[in-house]
Image (cartoon, rainbow over all chains, first blue to last red; front, side):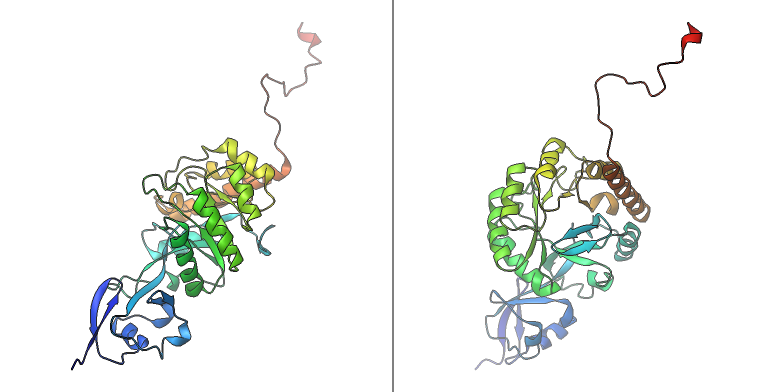
Length: 70
Length: 255
């Protein structure tokens, strides 16, 4: 039985524990949740959902933020 | 005062945030420019540098954020970026950019119009970056664009307004504000746009890559104000032959 799951985060595969919440992943990555917008499997998540959203095996995440541009 | 989508702007210079040597230089240059609206782009977070966040130096009280859809190659990609921008910034303001060709970065008119129609329906305040095509400007305006942003010359080229003939027609015909965007490489280019009657200009590269971005930002601010004053004052007509400035009478004593 598997004790871990695989997700793809910004194009890179990562292993994380089952029942990992999105907010935990963001903290592990050193990211302040308020500074990123998250698209999970093509759906943009509301900021309020970060604390409760459970990642699932195979989830594809895009973590996006503002950068300099013209 | 310039009004776009019901919002008033004292400054007619919009600023970009790309290509600055540091976040601090960018912050100081934006302050010196007096701008009240700044563009930003959206990209994947750099997971190797998670603390690198431009928003820590951008004062949201001072600036209206105008996220762009740079990097989008068609309407579908632009719309996806637009929704991410709205989620990230909490603002419906959007600089729509659809540039399929990385060599010229010229905007795709068909995809830009398509995306404008869809995003306006979805409640976005859309300012489309467009080639200087007067007919397209009318089509975008009819589709609900809050302003149109014709290019002076391709992005980052510093060539000035090579599209002057078309930009003049766009300004003549437009019922929405006209913001000349892209290619303005010198304060004189910005002044020229404003003298032509543009409502505002957007400048990024020319300020960001200058030897002294803060000073260059100030120079652009003065040029924009000067050009606007000149436009409002009314320029004299250009003419073929000389017309003496001094009286032509009262010279009898010489003859």
